[in-house]
Length: 193
Ligand code: IMP
Ligand code: MG
Image 1: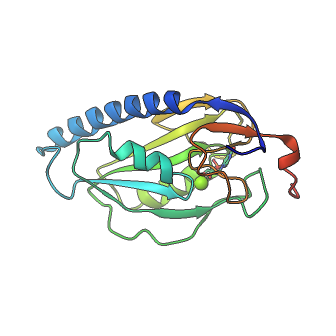
Image 2: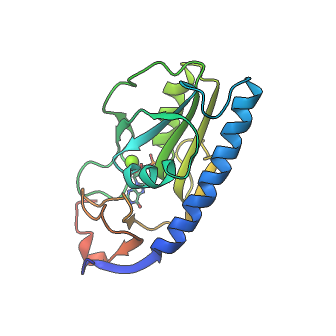
């Protein structure tokens, strides 16, 4: 699809199968929690998914369509990679959390867990609101030493320490529309790292 792609790491079929697995596990777990509260999966105002924009956009779009649960989305913008960068420079919130999450079952969704700063920041902010439960779900987890102590409750794939693009993940804002997870040719990563 793009000449700058070096190789595909995860195909669209592998992603689709794994997203279905994650969805099944997540809905089973959420349904169990709701029942424990005396609620039904179709009761209103119990479940809120918080996708971290913009990387989680494609993942959350596919994931929510596997969840037969009444839920709301509250998007959160976090910036960690200004421009042509392949290393996290620390996470910063771009918008306030739009609504009260206390007492709700909250699932934070991100594309990839790398240094851990993004998830740690978001978990901390949401945790202060005392949700009924707080889960984290990432499509990818990079096999690196984390800068922040954090883990994901649901993770799609573990990948080596390489910079990847596609399925929502970008380099300098591009390649989010690639349907698979891929590695760029080194010559394409010519930013000031
Ligand atoms: P962390 O805060 O270092 O864990 O990084 C998480 C954020 O950095 C993710 O939400 C992604 O947007 C971005 N990120 C980390 N690794 C990659 C990558 O390999 N490709 C594209 N974006 C990445
Ligand atoms: Mg991100």
